[in-house]
Image 1 (cartoon, rainbow, N blue to C red):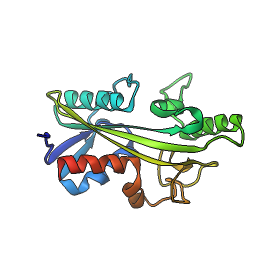
Image 2 (cartoon, rainbow, N blue to C red; image 1 turned 45 degrees about the vertical axis):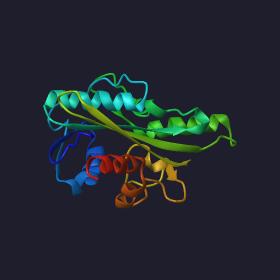
Image 3 (cartoon, rainbow, N blue to C red; image 1 turned 90 degrees about the horizontal axis):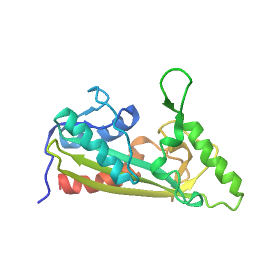
Length: 208
């Protein structure tokens, strides 16, 4: 029998405000009080996994262990057909910038530009089809866990368009649409995104 999370406090294993907002909105109907790992001052564990599942589990288990509460983590990324599925699990790494002094940060415009640069190097025949993947990992402090996967297919476009999303949203046009994820109303994106697909599986399993 599937373990149920029920209602109450749930740690969202992220320090990303945009991701917390999106996940909290998806969970709002189910009576969960969401708080981020960042707000609790929890450290970010090294994401040493080679797959989305491995990295999601690393983050969920760390947050559950450190907080003593159930935790939900996601690992997601953009894969481009012409780049053999890259950046994929290394999606966030492509956005890392290092300063000579001070903390590191993420420059998503730089990351989007890296993808475009590699596609330009291939030439006009480059296959711009791509997909967003998402794995949700739900973990409890006792070490038990569950995972749920989602995906949405589309095409990489340049230049970026829209300011309603985050990460690579402004360069991703989902199949059947003309707008990028950065242009689509957030409520609509929540219905069709890779994260929404994964959440539909989680909801069916946990609250169905």
